[in-house]
Length: 143
Image 1 (cartoon, rainbow, N blue to C red):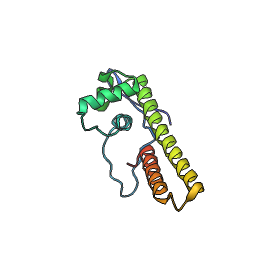
Image 2 (cartoon, rainbow, N blue to C red):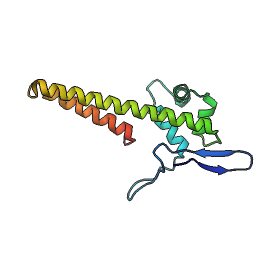
Image 3 (tube, rainbow, N blue to C red):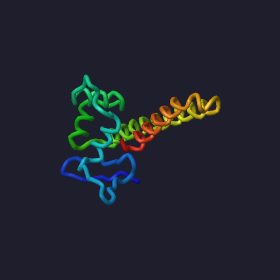
Image 4 (cartoon, one colour):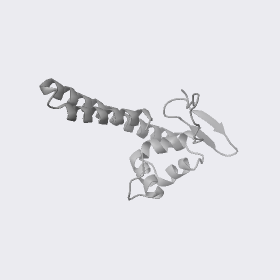
């Protein structure tokens, strides 16, 4: 899907959703977040215990290879450039791919343990598969 451009008086806003168009089905709650804010959230993940929002936005900026002010602008719904939107989207996709790869590795380890001795390694296999499911949910944006 091509980026949607909303023209303003002197600048423009680029809206590039990470999963194509963001649609909310029956019973789904519309959070009202802008697509750029959702991209910033997908890159930054959850706040760490030692972080405030400013530190979190700095971490997002570092991860995406952007200036803090550009990320803060995207967070607050200000006009951003195509390059900023592209870098945020690439960083979010990279994080999703890493989560999917981690899930696949965990499932592979569980499968190898099952081949060795399924009864003996049952608890470890269940834990690995549960963790893999969590990583898949994280990659799919469900968590």
